[in-house]
Length: 344
Image 1 (cartoon, helix red, strand yellow):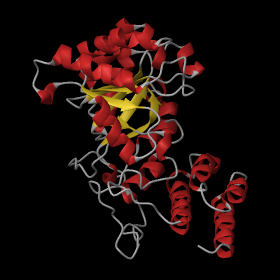
Image 2 (tube, helix red, strand yellow; image 1 turned 180 degrees about the horizontal axis):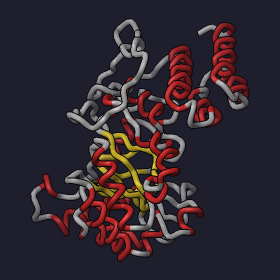
Image 3 (cartoon, helix red, strand yellow; image 1 turned 180 degrees about the vertical axis):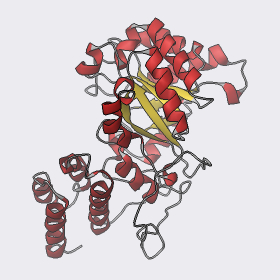
Image 4 (cartoon, one colour; image 1 turned 90 degrees about the vertical axis):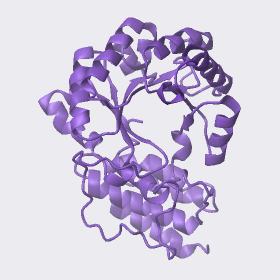
């Protein structure tokens, strides 16, 4: 998600849900990474699978990535730490040639996979024929997939998409087409482009997509079949497991449901105290400031403050104050004052 799944956001999940499903905090609550003065970004050597979940970067435009000035601005979106593995770079655009070159760049950076965004419904991207607009341009979509695969140096290539452009009934033809492209995985947001995020997710269509996959690729070994990943309205780890059981899909992708809850992917359904939640919120803000403060506005943290400061007595007042902040110092002062006045 643009301006959400940055390196600081992902690092929080790696720290609090990571380690292949285990919490990587010591029993005392001490952060085992607190003594790391400088987080080392990966250079692509010796890939190590650290987590039981996969993380994706913000979606990065291939045109900008291949322009000298654009690259200087966008390269921060492709930085990650080793404990964030497996990590997939998500790309968007319309030029097969640029996807080919961008895939080469991504492979050299040491990513574990490349995902092509064919699902974003925003007008800016749709207006230039990118993202969800590709649902109506399968010939170009096919060229982009093929070009990305050529440049990927053997990395898995996947597509994030939607059920269709304007009707859920478009799903059978569109997903059937993508299955012919021999992708490693297809993540399906269970809504159409027109629905954006306004309608309830149509999870019954994810089940249909799995049935289409099994029918068309049933003779292939399971290890070579295209994975079907469902997406939409997942609010908890257990709900994700339930959706997998109900639909037969191979996994779920979680977006908004994980905001403010870096413990989301812990299998033990860990629920932090309010004090711990707010302390971790400040750690997130500190990490954002450390890693991204020179490139991005601290105001971007507000959407995370809104999620962290929710569901407890006094949250509304605290949230209102945090949504006015423009610096780490302001956020820390407001939060520490709140914590000093409230009995937990």
